[in-house]
Figure 1: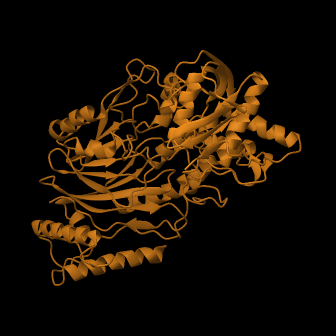
Figure 2: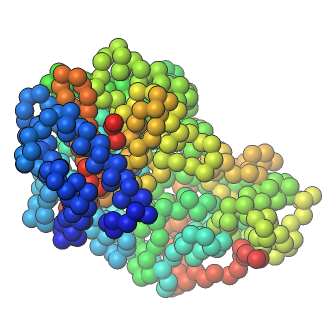
Figure 3: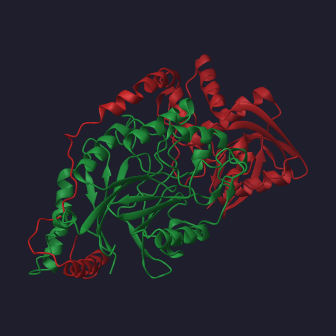
Length: 255
Length: 327
């Protein structure tokens, strides 16, 4: 703490001490009494073993399931803030699109929110536990058939929020608006309808997404998002592949 | 860690000494006061957004590796309880969701561990609703402490009669009133998962309950457990707006925004009095602590100290210095 008059902390300290001074005189404290001591603990305090003993049986059951390595990633799947496209977001949206198309090959694109991705994934072994932490929620896959106009609204939301996880859709963000929107490589046509794969939390109004409010049709697939992610990783492993997600410019910033 | 804290402490005292040379204020005799019979010291410990973090974060190179975990938090709380006679252990919601403990066991493990640790009260965050309101009603049967919820009307749900808006703690004649506030669930939680729950304006509810706690129950300290969030860019109600827009709340223990506040914020409320807001990050990485000293006869109080412990192998306390916002 530097004691310069320009430092607000210093001024705050002066104010506090004058208050303390007032308080002390009110309580008529004898000078030189022992100071109030903060509780201080060093590394020698041991964890309470009764607590570990309590959760150990649960932990063993959980670890047996969670520590199962189901795939490998060649790159760390990260989600740095303030960029329109992330490796984690691409992995997530690619996985959903691939899994959704097993139920309906006519699905055009997938969409989720970056806020819904709760952890990053490391390079190397991917466990069931990683995917639980990435998607702890019990959300289930939903197909929404949307008008082209609704998709344009959704793209506008994605642009206004600085990019969100998508697959099958490409766009350029310019001045917080969506431009050059392409679905499956073709420019968005307002007169057509498109099939979006997303999940119930978003389809039911979560995160206040624009464009999802009035679908032409809705199909609940009854499959958890997390299960879809697990299947996707396992399928890659079965095919002898590592996850090797890349940034491909699906959402670009035009500045 | 320990060393740097000592340095901070020393620098603080040095600064204090230089300001008050000759006034003998560098050593403040609170310990003597608290044991004097005329005064009572209350230690408030708090967490928020623990998110099912039962074990410490795994040692995998990530930012929070090795931090948190219930066993060390329990040991710390226990040692503070052995030192301080009057302790309240409070939580501001989102106790669950975030590790597979919740997915596999539905919150039973978290509730039983919090009960075992002696939590005095918690409130509902949005994630308490993640398995639906019926599952939540079942989950809280594993808790031996109340979930305080003043601004959700659960009358038409399975939670009817299973929560309470506020509770009172009596500490040697002094009363401490604690109530809970939750966030707007619309757009935050799947409507199927909170069906039947009616959200009430938190500011109106808070003013009503805080006045009752202060005047009807004669509480010397009124605490709000809030899952509203610390602050927002827009007009969404937050702990900052709550503090400024109400009367009679002394302390808001916040959550939801996972804000780690290095020191509490003191906000002038509608009466021009101080409402203190504090929040300590998430995942049980930190345990917040505020110590109040009450003059028993008048109920007048001072905030003696505030800070937080980082739950690591060092278990270091980061004091923010003695803070007394009350004039």
